[in-house]
Length: 439
Ligand code: ATP
Ligand code: MG
Ligand code: MG
Ligand code: MG
Image (cartoon, rainbow, N blue to C red; front, side, top):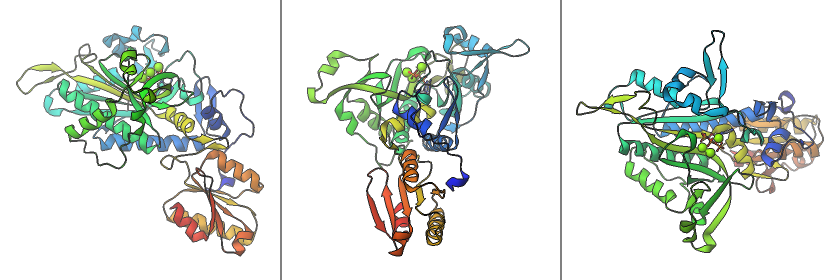
């Protein structure tokens, strides 16, 4: 992409309404624009990162054997009356009436709708296990929408639902979700810690929230520092190997890690003092096992091997896709702007032309651009007439991992400058070597 042809409305000034750094940087980098309180338009740069985050979530869910589908945002109130949640859900639910006077709602979550799909088409244990998920907009009429996309009213969520014949099978689904979530966050450059949590209005027995540690997080968390050393790295995960999944989950759930709702002082005090940590965290996902809470009232049952009939055991599992952009920025920025992890960056490399209109500089920028594209990368070429300082400031603000700077002086010696956004280190090298290093 050439910047002169792109739409990147960066802001020079700090927007007054932004209280936390991720909100401020998303506005300044021209990623989002507020449409109404807690409702945002995703401008091209923000939309690109959102799609990248979404793609990682899809890949990791499908790797775990979970099947994508798409349910609508608008739902019928009748299904929610059947489960008993229409009245119970409260004021966070946006209720709508159509021209026929039918009660509808903008889905805050999808347990009812997915259970209705399941009961219409599945009646035998032979069709299990089954996990279906989608990535769809949700609406919750949050009393205090704030911090930009972190607590929106309209937000993008991945929500997945497992259907299993009994408790043991449902716990395997729980483990699959925990491991696939760990992988998902790691690929985004995030350390998200699974913490034993409280089940809240969705209701359930077993649940973990995934929290990214950050001072601006809304949750209070308590944990054993040992858990922050754990990584999956590149270990091979076999999602059909229940024992392997269990051992990974045990690894992550053995060190103490809880939110304030389930915090237990006596257990916490048993941790060696130097490892006892309390801080703030951003909830970027949650997994629940809730058994037959929805399958009972909605009559979602299957025939068993011995001819009996049992309600299916379910769980639901959510990732805050749009919130993740805020969480990634909270975890990865400096005073100049965002520092995108490679896995989600909107462009792989910036190209800055120090002397637009100089024949040699223009030609070299074009060559580097073509070479990066040929290597399968997406560069952003600042081909505007802005002065160098302004170009650097924009590149630093939008946080691309690499910048290649091209100017007539360097070209006389056959070199360009390659700069890493994360370390700030620059080196002079040939254009070919620079491209090779980025690729
Ligand atoms: P919170 O405690 O932050 O209100 P929640 O527990 O109500 O979140 P869940 O029902 O667990 O949310 O939804 C799954 C995920 O969706 C959450 O872990 C979070 O990452 C994301 N999410 C929930 N509410 C919002 C929101 N208002 N804006 C953006 N993301 C949200
Ligand atoms: Mg909530
Ligand atoms: Mg919560
Ligand atoms: Mg939650």
